[in-house]
Image (tube, rainbow, N blue to C red; front, side, top):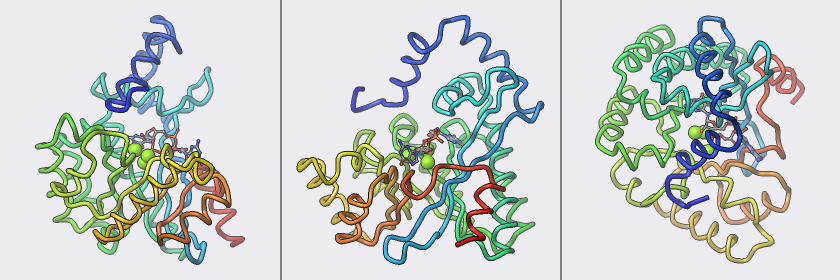
Length: 276
Ligand code: C2E
Ligand code: MG
Ligand code: MG
Ligand code: MG
């Protein structure tokens, strides 16, 4: 894949190879009804502290349970929903579902924060902020526990909108995470322009660590910079104890990945949390 515009690349790859034009039309048609048919579900993937290996939060990840084709990956349907103008309304559902769930877990003492992905068209949707305000009114203690993940490659094309949106969010005292850090262009520049609290380092930076010398040095460098800048760091895609060792000996970054847990439905995750 090209280094820049990774999301676009995946999108067009889906259009041309992974699915035929007819499949795409069917997907679009079905997407129109998915929300009202309650076919969306949130899965949750735990995030751990590097030091105590304690669960500190969860990331909410969207799933589409298609009535005949089974579960469809968000990498496949989110870009299509985005193009169709459906993401603002799907996003409102995600926001409410994730925050209601976080409240339930918080009341049981089970989690710290919930991290919610936001796509680019949601940032121009004023009903998003309205919905957030309603939810904050319902759960006034919640804002510091909410992380909103903004994807780096979305920022490139919408710098001004993203900056304005991020400022609105910061007024509500929620945290902002820069997702897929390092995949887009001018990553370091965004650190200056946006009120970012958390950096989520993309799996591409970790997958060959520690075997690959170049990748390992690059990751160590990023960890050093983010430490100097006092940024909270979450590393995505942790799959081995060697990766954990490499990271925790160099930083206090938080860890997320299949090594700990795949994303799971709320009730399944809750079962494992109660056992911890
Ligand atoms: P993301 O936000 O970067 O989410 C991380 C993705 O990495 C998730 O894929 C997660 O399941 C996967 N992952 C986590 N740990 C590992 C690991 O150890 N190894 C590997 N190979 N993968 C790992 P998922 O759930 O398929 O989501 C893919 C992307 O779809 C997300 O990337 C995000 O860009 C988008 N997406 C998912 N849910 C939402 C949502 O609610 N809203 C929006 N706007 N986008 C979403
Ligand atoms: Mg994310
Ligand atoms: Mg994301
Ligand atoms: Mg990511």
